Length: 91
Image 1 (cartoon, rainbow, N blue to C red):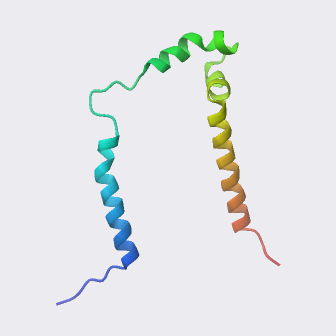
Image 2 (tube, rainbow, N blue to C red):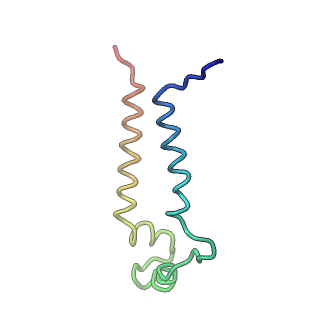
């Protein structure tokens, strides 16, 4: 009888991945729930008054969600810095 050997790290990874995939629907939206919220309507109604900007997308990204955008830019910069350090030439 032939025996199939799976590396232990791969087996652990597969068990964790399958468990997360099976648990994922418990944390998502249920069927039939609307995807919009009261926050959407607030942004539509108050963007120009609160920010003074005629462009709603710009107002949301840079005014309402400014700290979030700054955090995303920081993460992107650190990722690019890490990749560039990984591929730098050593003498």
